[in-house]
Image (tube, rainbow, N blue to C red):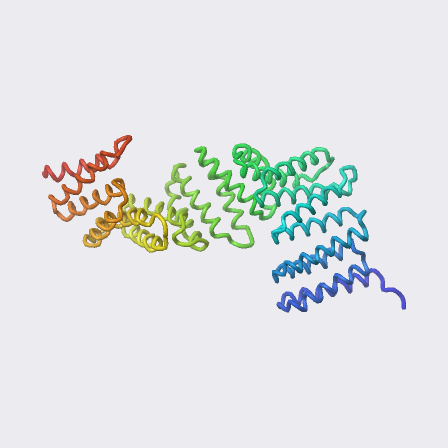
Amino acid sequence: MSKPSPDKQRSEFAEIISQGKKYLFDEQMERARAEFSQAQSFAEAHFGINSEEVDLAHDELINLLHILELKDDELALLESLVAKRRQHEPQNVPSLVSALMRLAKCQVDLGQFDAAEAHFKEAIASCSLHNSEHLFSLQLSHVDYGRCLCRHHQAERAVEVLEEGLKLYARIKDGNVMMAADMAMYMALAYWNLGREAEAVELGTQVAPLTCHRSAGPNADFTRMLYHVGGYYHQEKKYKEADYYLQWALTRLFQESSIKHRNIGAVYHLLASNDRLFGKPERVERHLRRALKFLLRGCEAHEPMVMDTRLGLINVLIPAERYAEAETVIAEAIEAIKNLERNLESKQNLYYNNLGFVQVHLEKFPKAEASLRFALKVAQDDQERAYPLKNLGLLYQRMGYVTEAIDYYQQALRLFEAEPGEPHPMIPVIQKALTELQNPA
């Protein structure tokens, strides 16, 4: 019997892969696994251990094992692939390096960092700078090794590996620009993690147009660097630049395959803070509300960033005299802080004082008095007592109880005047109220 032609063998291989994908689509996982395993054996027998067909079969099988979260099986498959390539065609360096890198990444996912690092180093050592066929693999090995070190808080070693990779790129004629940009961006992240923020921002902003272009595809690490750059400029009071990079980070977050609600909320939260200082008051509330919406989908309601966002929104609504809306947000905050184990009293003091204040303006006087007296009860120091006392003065002033209003205003005034530093801005407010009460027209 004549041997099947290469084209017929490839057609048969493609049919096996296609059948496996159909089973995968129908969620018949065991049948899909059987088909991809058959495709792997078929490819090794007919096309060779280093063939593109073997890589394709392995990719499909590894993807399936990853979906099924069978990490040990995935690891065993990759270890087998590396062993076969070492044995049968060790001179085919790109193929061996590809297998080593995939094995190392799987080991990283399993927490086997030392073993992964050994395979990253082997991949780099297998390549020769003087062999043009090795150069792509050599650059890619530095990118992946540096990325792994960055993600596992080995920033100093990441810088060493990535610096070496960039030096190699400089020596390579027609080197891969995108891989060099990736190395530079990971180096920026490593700098940031080392506290070298100015260097990180300088390098990150230089390569961001390449690494974070819309055609480059999503990369959570690089998006995080954009967020860091935006935060850095915000701290440096460069609000226009901060807005640019935060908006860019937000755009990329929405491009990712799975929505990270916490991260999106964090960007909106910082944007709102930046808007306030950037002179964009019309955007502050919009960004705070969006921050709150996303944070509540990705965080517990009592987590600090959620509470800070609520407080920011309250501080927008109260000056705008939108007291009914403020009351709703404050009530949600009070419900959320019931789960706090620390600083509960201080948080209760803050929110019940705010609640009492808006209830005074809504003329819900009995509720306002109850809220303010509770805020006073849980106050931890004179500073926390001063505001409820002042607002009790306001309450009784609104109710027409002049003697009680004067008494509480005077108590609050003494506490505000006793605070160190510059005169408290609340002092003239109370003095004006006392003048009105003591010298009625």
